[in-house]
Structure formats: C-alpha cells, structure tokens
Image 1 (cartoon, rainbow, N blue to C red):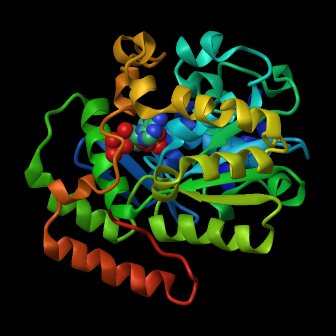
Image 2 (cartoon, rainbow, N blue to C red):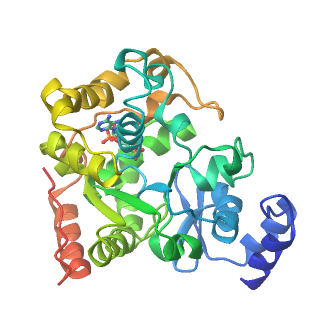
Length: 331
Ligand code: A3P
C-alpha cells in the first residue's frame, strides 16, 4: 500500500495517479462486486468504490482542514441530501429570502460538494482555495480514514446516520438507478449477506457509525451525531441543535417568526422532490437528481426484508454495539 501513498504524493495537482498506476494498485487489493456492477476494494479495513479511489487517497493525503471548516459526514443513503439542504439553508438564511434560495433551482449535492469526488476526485470541479470561509464540505469517509489535519484541527463535523435496514434498502434502489437495471428482488438475499459481512460502500456500516459515535462522545463540541429517525420524529429540535452547533443559533425573534419551520419546509422531502431541478434534471455524470429522492420514510425496509433478515440484523447490532449505548429505531 505504500506504493499507493507514494504515487499520490508525487503526481498531479492534488496527487492524482494515472489510470494505469491506479489499475496496478487496485489489482493488489481484495475486491468484491456488487451485483449491479460496482467494484468495492478493501483498503485499510474499509470497502471503497473504485470510482472514488483517486479522490479518497488524494483527499487523505492533501486536505488541510481549517478551524472554521464544517464537514458533513454520512454513511451513504443515510440522509446526506437532506443534511446538505439543511446546512446550506441554515448557513445562508440571511443571504437570501427563502423564496429565492438557490436550493429551489440547484440540487443540494451541487451546493455542498463531496471532498473525495468533486474536489479531489478524477474530474474536480472546484479548487478549495476558491471557496469562501467558513467552508462547508461533505464526505462519506470513515473517521479512522480522515486526513490527519481534520483530526488535529478544530474543524466541526456533523455526522448523520440511519438504521442499517433502511440504509440497505435505500442503497439497493440507488444502485439499480445508477446502473440502469430493473429492481431484482432475487438479489436481495445475496446483497443483504454482503452488507451483514461488512461489504458495503464505505462499510462496514458498524465501524462507520461507531467511530463517529465515539468521536462525538469524546469531542461533543466538535462532532455532532445525528440520526435520520430522530430528525424525522422531531425536526424542529434537531434543526435548532444543528444551527447551534454550526455557530448560527436561531434567535428568539427568528423562532417567533417561524424561521425554523421555513427552513424545514424548504428542505423537506416533499418540497425538494417536486422541484423542477430534482424532478427532471441530471447531474454532471448524466444521472437523474430524482435518484436522491425516493420515499424518505422510516421503516420502508419492512416491504422488502424477511423476519429472519431482521433477526440477523438485530443480533449483529447487539454484538457490534454492545456497551456503546448506540442503537437504532427501525420503524
Ligand atoms: P429512501 O431511499 O429510503 O427514500 P442520501 O441523501 O444519503 O443519498 O440518502 C437518500 C435517502 O434520503 C433516500 O431514502 C431519500 O429518499 C431520502 N431523502 C432525500 N431527501 C430527503 C429529505 N429532504 N428529507 C428526508 N429524506 C430525504
């Protein structure tokens, strides 16, 4: 693996390797294929998609966190789109009236960018130097794989997670949209087994959430830990917590004027899903933005998974989260 790091330090703007070099390195890593055709490579104890490999390594090697940075981190399909919309709206609520928010015409993923994709990935669209401070950025990277500068700096992290069964089902649907294949229920068992074995994009799931859970306990002023289910249940309280953590608490006046409700309405699943941009437009890779808005519910897994799958997951959660105080609501 040293070869990978060395190459990244010596080549390119942000240390990107050539396609050939990357191919050679990937050949040396354990690989598993998700049925829809995505290759996951096992690197330093985690499963990463091949498409983000350049960006992941380059981000690890080169990102210099600043104390004022706010980094939004999620396990994929845990509500990233919602969190980006909320953070953007909270941050910019004094810059635009809600009726003129860029969120009405731009997908949240184009307002807050992924470090390992749009910034350090193969086809970057923005240089960090061009972002105004405080920078708001996003990643799916596990805590143990974050660049050292992020752990050493005072930058703040908002981590959002979701129960593993809904994450699993949400990703199944996302994968078929990305690969343009029909939903095949016969694949669920095989994919569920992979997920339970830890083989999932940025997985294992348990390690991802546990690491951030522990970090949030150790440094609550720097790492805010949110759950999708809690946000759905009590959005107002969580929106307040998020704004306060961002250093932008709602004032008494704002509260009495209903600003929190406005933020939540603008960022709601129903509102975002029906916007022209999210209904009919495509991202720079040609994928429809609508793929980020499916059902937006807690408990949809029950329409796809069997009681024995639930039992397996419950056992795994007991085992993996034992003594941590972490748990999830499934409905
Ligand atoms: P479902 O597939 O269960 O519907 P991510 O944003 O991390 O990719 O996660 C996608 C999941 O979040 C999808 O879940 C999607 O429908 C849901 N989602 C997207 N926008 C949302 C919003 N504004 N509020 C609540 N859930 C949202």
